[in-house]
Length: 272
Image (tube, rainbow, N blue to C red; front, side, top):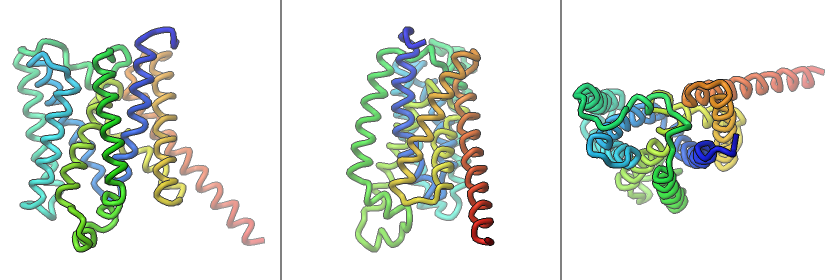
């Protein structure tokens, strides 16, 4: 299987996805804004269609448009501070409206349907370079902003009082979300991309460990889901996005079952 160049490319991208998505997702989950990931993934479709329309790299188009939408979400928070769901509806309307209009116009220079479900056949050398650059820059940014992001995730108002530049960092984080979405679309697909952002984190949270351990476990669960998903999609000849998503759900269910079994065993031991 690894004798094929497209599978080597796919696994390289899978490693990048497994590294970056949980790093972004854990902060989103702690901020109770994981649905932003779903909105951003749909926003990426509009960026893809714009990239195809202008004959530029679809990943680059997705990154630019998604970053704009992420910044717009932060901007609209000033006007709808207690209505995040309304802000997401506005962004979804803008994104889906743009994508449907461009797709139905018949002016796209390539087929955008492959980006709905993901494909292991479509990752080329140019995509790998773009994905590698976005991943490295994002991980470095997360490293330098780690403490501030963690502070904001637990208590945004306290972070403001402590002098953290919350608004500026929120805009930076929006760009990081755009990067995570952009590197994932070719393999995972637009429709189930949010699963790679939220589900590994959900599995890791069930372990009830500290933040760093939870983050590392999230990356581990993400990598496991990607590897199983790519192997499964290759041998079953199905779209990788759906299979990766199902694998992520399956891992979460296994973790929950093991957690409950251990809880029952502890109660039995305690009762003795």
